[in-house]
Image (cartoon, rainbow, N blue to C red):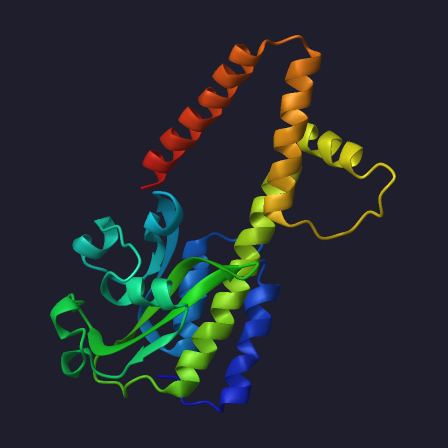
Amino acid sequence: MDDRNPLVRLQDLQHFLAAGTLDENLNQQAAMTATLVGAVSCSIMLLNSGEGEAMRMSVYARHGNLPDEALQATVGRGEGIAGRVLATGQALLVPDISKSPFALLARGRAGASASLICAPIRIDGKIVGVINAAGASGQPAFGETALRLLEVTALFIGKSIQVQQLQRLLDSRFAQLALEREEEGQVRTAYRNPEDVARVLARSFFKELSKAGFAPAQIISATTEIIDQLNNQLKHDK
């Protein structure tokens, strides 16, 4: 565990951003988080299947060793430790899992202790996943300071994911033109809510197909193809 003053440790968050996190993948972010809180392993789980309240999440990135069972599992609201955090939206500190209500849920990790911390990852107030960290064997259990550091880091990860999504989206010429048309006569803002952008693109897609003379049935067919591509991507990402 990192014994430095908490204020000094918080300075590491500057490196979390300055190290180019907008272009770094989630595995690198998990590694940086593990270093920050003094964890032997860290995993980032994101919602990627199901709909509404039945959506489930799985491990998208990790640092350190995790059992195969954890890597392959999907977790819903209220299921296990991460599922509880997903359901409640509250960060969770488990000083000793063997002496907690989650004792039966513990999965063995080589070199890991019985101490765990988990925090929700949010984008625009909505929970999109959970970040988990396990303490090292032989080290003191996590405390409130480590939990608060994990919560702050989870905020940065959420913003990083959001910006990466927008950057990839705005690389599309179609997206750029759609947003430009939407903003005609309006005040242009630097920030765009991803859900708002998605709706703008959907409206533009429909208008363009209609102007090109496609019939309603053909537009439905095109929309179905998009859904099929999304389903294939979700299966590939699992």
